[in-house]
Length: 117
Image (cartoon, rainbow, N blue to C red):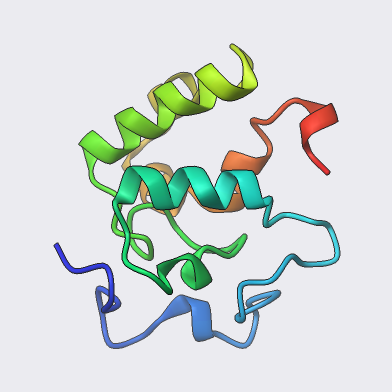
């Protein structure tokens, strides 16, 4: 699976409603560098891929994470941020449309408050 090309001709990261298409932290600080590092790690992503990790980036549609990568991400989140950062539990409660819409900002909300700088 290529991580350098968007999955379709329309890239939501370039949309006008994206808070920060360049990938730098937005005013709310949603692009936590530790979260970006975890995503890059589980994706085995090439240099430059981290720029796609914005708060509005969808885990499936934009970042192209597969089930194996999502399982690895869930394990790393719990290991590094504790049991409250339970991606598996979050995903278990979602229907297909919500799973497809899951974003980096949604992951951010799983982090404990003291880690959500």
